[in-house]
Image 1 (cartoon, rainbow, N blue to C red):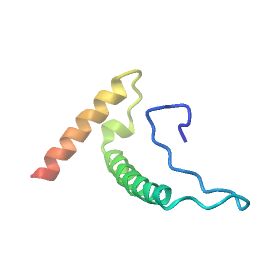
Image 2: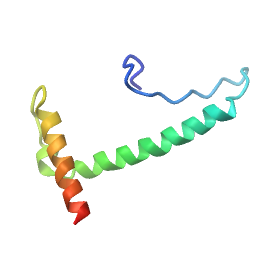
Image 3: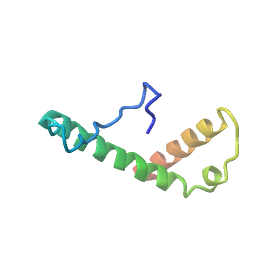
Length: 80
């Protein structure tokens, strides 16, 4: 995970066997986190099918700009 990055939301860890189980609200939050993460992972996997991103070897903001452009093109193709 990205434990050192404060901008990344981490799911709650399952407790060890000698600890009490997670409260229901933490389990619910983990479920929501899991579903959102799955959507993001699928979107990233779909975007990797674009050749420019798959072969991208840019430095600094180049990957960001390429990803942003591909996301915009993907959104255009999805909306018709």
